[in-house]
Image 1 (cartoon, rainbow, N blue to C red):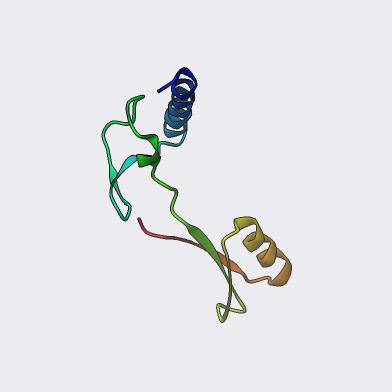
Image 2: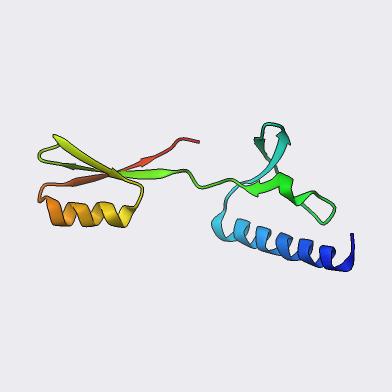
Length: 102
């Protein structure tokens, strides 16, 4: 590994650990192909292949707007759009968050 590659890897590691600390997300490693991600109690270092490491992605979310007494629904992956739809299109709306399980 040359000096520039080493510097780039150190920068990546710094950003990786800063994001892990900021978000509290789990550190994972890819063990097999096709990709299977496993939680680790330690993380990458300068000797690791960084493409095999990630922070566990945030679960996907959607919002359901129930309106017309719960007889109609509108679904979006954008929370602000759900709130806007509910505020502008119906007085009896209920917004429900749905989170994809791990």
